[in-house]
Length: 533
Image (tube, rainbow, N blue to C red; front, side):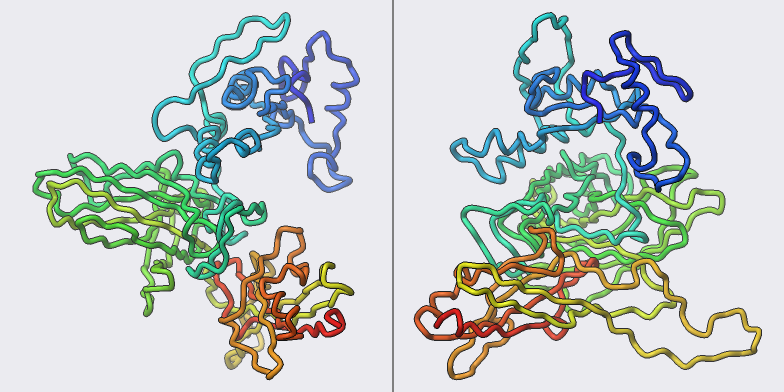
């Protein structure tokens, strides 16, 4: 990796021209980088160099960086010019937005996010104040324009195609004060928590505010204003959700009573000729004096001949009212394009909000929360596997203040094969469905861990009564959870002799966003008599 002081003046496809104060060995080192350092396989041809392979360091803390770091980091990136020169940026110390603010009075996750959002995508309104940067001795005067968010320097790229990696998000920035499982609050803490493993997309088309448009044709009335926020007090799964605050101005136009608004949420890279399923969990918090009808759809980001065509089919759910006041929207859609178009299409998935106002002349304030979004391919002829957890084991520690280890293994069950029909010995069609080698085995995002004490009379409550203990991911091991018995919420009952055993439950959350039913989860009983003796 190269620092801000290691900068070539010009780089062409076949030659590198280094500034006069450059040691030749540095240029030789760069040109001799082999496939091991560039991510290719050992023994392959040397990687062709370009300016993208040079990462220019910028320290957000401002330690020696031009512009002084912080909200002045854009000044250094302006000189690196990734959009014109093609150089890459290595951003150091981006935790500055938290570390520089956490000890100030009134600090909260909401204040941190407001600060962090301004650095990366810019403020919702107004301007960002950029402090005067210290000038080093001998540094020439350098003028810059107003603040630019970091994201403005780089092209907008979609996440991997859900055909290759199912798309899953609970709109979590990796911090929170509570934890929810299927809309139920199972844990809350005043101190808050941090877990990078739980970071997801927070909707790359929502910030600093989404580019809404009318979904029901052209209108002359002004578009509603949609302001996104992160809500740390409510979630479907995880610790947060996205709040969409929709403000509609009153109108006396003839068509003002009914209006339909398209709110893009997330970009997707989709493959032509593939069928996908998408699911969104939402909650209407405030509807104002209006009736709301929410829909879910996919639209092309390109226009004209390059635009993809989608056949979107809503999926009706028998029980649309879920726990915690949440609701579910699901669609199945096909990506069909012209034969001469590219295989992958960049598209947007989002919410359609139909508003029927009681009095269209009155202003409306609407609040909707979105808690989880999943997109994944729909198998055509392949039997759908059912993920499950096979077994669990708990290694009892030698004392109550040492961690015990809970471990488990997962599996999948497949439905019986349909009767095999072979028309002739030379039939080229396979007699059974061909199973893709990609993504056939169930994958889990994380696991919820619960505990339930045993009582001397032998009574053990149902798993729904178990106490949530935590989730996997924090220590980087997917199927292991460390438990310090002394920190169990119900440990005092053991000390008073009310019980000597505990039952631990392991509940998986799949990469399709589904929390496993208890019948597909496992438990293990741990006898703690030796420790308590």
